[in-house]
Length: 252
Image (cartoon, rainbow, N blue to C red; front, top):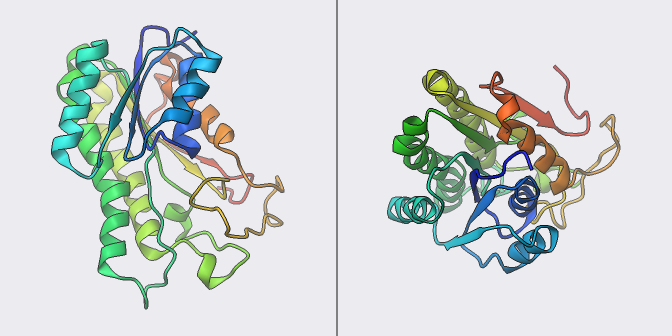
């Protein structure tokens, strides 16, 4: 129970990586704030089946809306007091090429993946993490933000689109900026970059795992374990890092 008494805010917590992160951090004793547009009933059931004493708060709304973000953070603070961990996980992924990309899809991916992360960092860090001189921020990026888009076995139609790749690259840059800005305040900021992982975003898209050292798709649990490391007090000397959890798809 290394996180007992701490509070973790997790976006995109209704399913996939976000849900698994919520369950994993709750196992370590953290109070969990679930943020999503959709109800988090399954996540809450999983958390409570693993830890009957877990304290959970659900906040439903659009993470791209600054007023919702402020209200959700205020509810979390009112319910649990200090806020210790922020996991910016929620994301969308258009798969159209740049020739067919619409402005609506571009804005959706950029706003969900980058703008929302900025809004939550701003609202949680100031004044909460700064006042307590402690915090752990973990941003879920992607291998696509490092190599310009992972190509699935479906070729062009399966490749993550330009807005997704650009937004995840921006998340990585934001992570490093925040790490430099807030390290002196006892706040770390790191990123986990998944490769091909079994989530709603990859559902129905064939991926060729043969180039990987570990020849399988990743699971949300694989990503959650990496998030847990960055969330722990013991990771306090690690910041500004991007941990690739991709089965050995990329090295260096």
